[in-house]
Amino acid sequence: MPPVPDAVTHRYTVTATPIGAAVAVFTPEDALIALGTAEDPMWVVESVARELRGSLEATGDDVAGLGAQLGEYFDGDRRAFDVEIDWSLVTGFARSALQAVAEIPYGQTASYGEVAEIAGRPRAARAVGTACRFTPITLVVPAHRVIRSDGSLGEYGGNEDVKRLLLELEGAPVR
Image 1: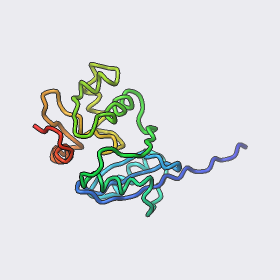
Image 2: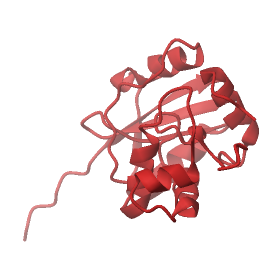
Image 3: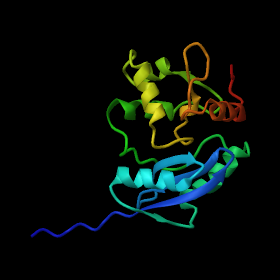
Image 4: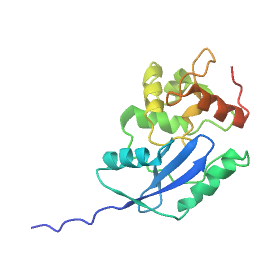
């Protein structure tokens, strides 16, 4: 009988932000695998645990310094996050789209169509929207910087006000 592999332990941290509790989930190697915001952090924890098919372990550590980086971002002192990303929860075109989104500079926006083109499928603007809507990593992968081709904001996790707040924080043009 082959040996049973050790269970992989993912850890999570919770950081208070102006848009709710930011729950960051890390691999054993300290790569960010998920980051979500919610009023109830346990909703994010349970959701990610289901996706990873396991349980998550809470830690009081500021893994990879992300908690401090989030604070600096919301204080207007940080323009980019310095954390390794584990993309394993995203596959196919969604991964390509979100990797393109991750390259949109602070304070700038791109349309869903522009992201689709960069990701290699120029006619896949709606698929980019779906990837942004279901991204397991918010803020660090700045889906809030993706807007409609007419310049209007569009949705952001069902909350256009949060998208507007993040873009205004970054000094991006907001319509």
